[in-house]
Amino acid sequence: MNSGSSALQNEATIVDLIPALRAFARTFCRDKTDADDLVQETLLRGIAHIDQFEPGTRIKSWLFTIMRNTFYTKHKVYAREAPGVNDCVSARSITYGDQEWHIRSQEVHAAIGKLPPQQREVLVLIAILGVSYEETASICGCAIGTIKSRLNRARMSLLEDLGEASSAAAVEPPTHAPLPFGQSPGRR
Image (tube, rainbow, N blue to C red; front, side, top):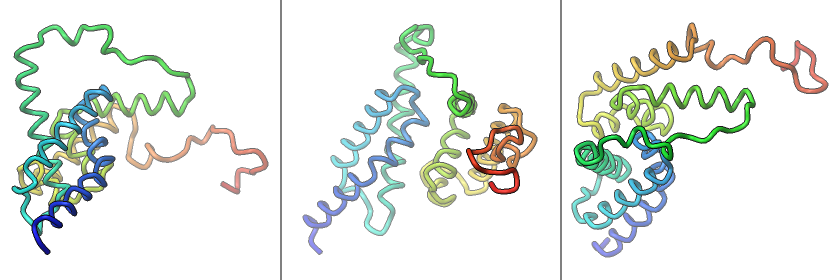
């Protein structure tokens, strides 16, 4: 295969990875617009430097690494140049309805947001995006044991923050929840 068709194939693969890139960007940026900007920056850098991609490696990991490095570089500059932005009213989230599932999802989202950045990115890569431990270690530039440790600490912090005794308690339906119409307690 010549390099021209290989580049086109890589670009098509990059386009297919946009949903995963968006999900990973949300671990870094709370605001959807900022996350989309990070995805766009990652795509621009990835396509501009596609010749540096090593065949035989995973393009997804390569792009995640570009995104991670881009975010941390921009974050360093932003921290130096934008004091007081945390107090901006426009950065506060809006309030939605009070359905239980929505409230619980907000609690989980807030708990994930409280995690240290290294734990949050490992949790999202492995638990949400399904990236392997090996790929995550490559993306984060550390050992697999460190990744497993960060993931375990992230899970334990989430459970503690959500007031759950165990991971099973976090996913079990509440015993007091109403059953769907026509179902008896024995038929779930």
